Image 1: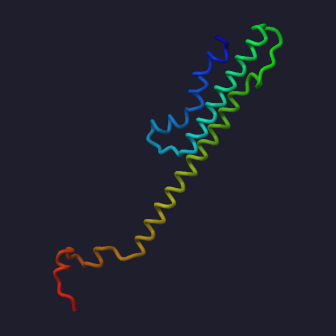
Image 2 (image 1 turned 90 degrees about the vertical axis):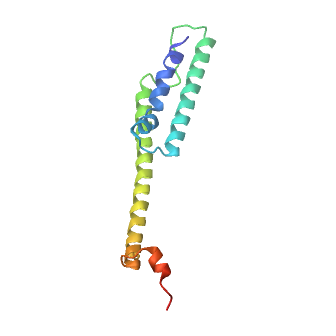
Image 3 (image 1 turned 180 degrees about the vertical axis):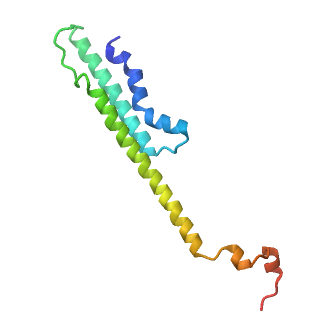
Length: 131
């Protein structure tokens, strides 16, 4: 088993860390953040398969290897993915918070049911004859 396949589970864990962490904390994860993780996981599996097949085609020589990506590229890739996922999640949560505050302000503009009934129950108001 090549080194690209042996590190694949750890790489997949890092790629899906933001949605898993947000779910554990109880934060609602946007579907776009989940899609970003799925796409990044598919890229990781594809790159591992390509690097494994290219190493098998060369006969497993340990000479000069032409990797598909630089050796220290994964931390940069994961860092950008984390920033993008957190941005998407925060953008979604701010949209939910702003729509909730808009709803609260629109209901405060209308008369509250207690003001309409002036402290009486709905049954008392319904029993009152119409003028």
